[in-house]
Image 1: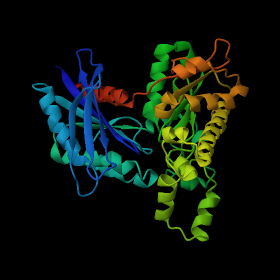
Image 2: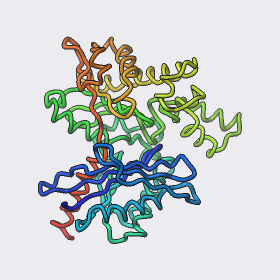
Image 3: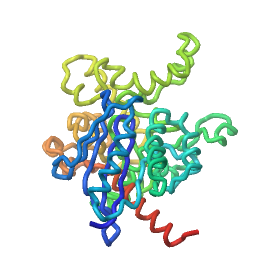
Length: 399
């Protein structure tokens, strides 16, 4: 077996692992995937091969409720699984790179400290991204770790898409729109180029719909506009995040209801969105299965926000040629895709209902003015590829 790269993808609601072998052509090939479930008192880590067979299943009680110990256990398991071959790097999804980090970087203690200073801009995500990095850095200081940033893909945004209408001196301190889900959007851009080079050059809106959700207006593989901004709170209604909200609401909650900054953070990141509106769950599967009218209201609000924000993306693109669904909800919830396309039919979208129900790659009719696709995302593969390139660059340029 050749050398290997382990990818750690820490999201707002899950931690996913993927182990890739690096063959002679330097293209990563998936060996197995894992997921870390931290919802119970005893976090559980399960690793499976691509056919679903379980390779590793471990849980342990931890004092602080986090699963870093399980990740270190998994590293030891990977050593045995690879036998005589080497784990040459660990790649990480890091949600916020700020202004300084527009490309993947090999991590040092100093860089981790700089990334930690961005925590106020992603308070739910950034600590979850950095915690495994610190644990591995302590346990395996010799093992290269490479950070790949969700904000990097959006560094191509024009100034009109990055500025808030606030005093210039505040903008110059870094208070601006960054955009997120960039690793997913980057994968979709590359995959669309493989599937339909002509479509990839046209005006595309990518809908990454999952626990976190955002849209990207893309032309020629570059980000033109996106719905998330300074933090991962803005834009679409999400599982537990509010999406776009009148800032006057926040002033009112502080001034009239006496809510603290900590109260607001908890409200906006953990208690709002689909969960807040439905009062039941932030999981779209549960809401679609429910007969509760509040669940229906939450779904309607989710679809409405996608249609409304998509119109903004279409405006930035001066039209629309291709709509792409990705992410857990985008890939698997045909009802959501149907409702979104119905709301956007005025743009010339015509959905093939049979293809949509079957989850086909192309779900638009032959005469639709807009091509509609489902493309499964693969952030882990993007990260693995960047690890290979970063290590190769380090070898070729040791300075």
